[in-house]
Image (cartoon, rainbow, N blue to C red; front, side, top):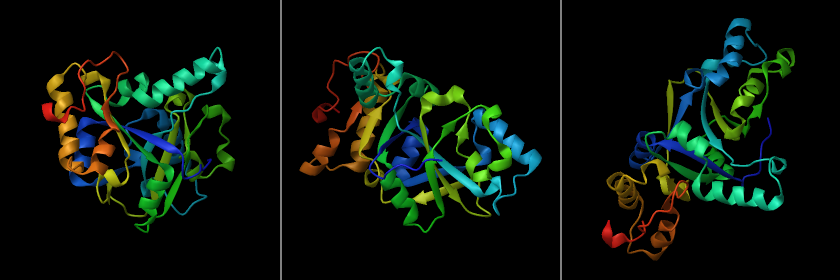
Length: 251
């Protein structure tokens, strides 16, 4: 597990339901790791259950997590540096088609924060927190005899390498299926909200999401809030959106 510096940006793709819950309740959710629906983790978790990794006083039941992406890519995958830079700019501005399809098929958003902000939020609650980059490895490359359960929780199948995941885990015995972290509101840990391009053609839905963000987070009479509004936008990944989402008077 590699832990990165606090100033690194991280991104999270959320379904509309998850985003609206976080927006309206000011709560960040951490799901119990063993209940994650992602089966790419399964071969490690099943191994743990069958063989009992005992290098920790904790079991799989004691971990809850939140998964983010860093949106980085190896420049060697591109013909030249210019193409690589174009790709990076496009993904950072509009999101990843793969991630939108995987996590926001029926609409959603991508939020942005930093490692330091999320780490600080969790630490301020007195929680036992682990965080770091996920390694993408085949099961044959994993030396189970030398790895602890904590090591295995930061390993994933290489088929999901495009997720470029950065993971936060809370370690606590006797925790419920979902850990709710109370925040001071979404704006206190998110500095950018990009609305899923899948709903760009649905004028009512896209405008409704945009207006909810304004109603819950902003006072448009405040210049500082108007500045924040510039970081709330529709993804232009698939096509150019002719209408300007920031025309407040039309919302």
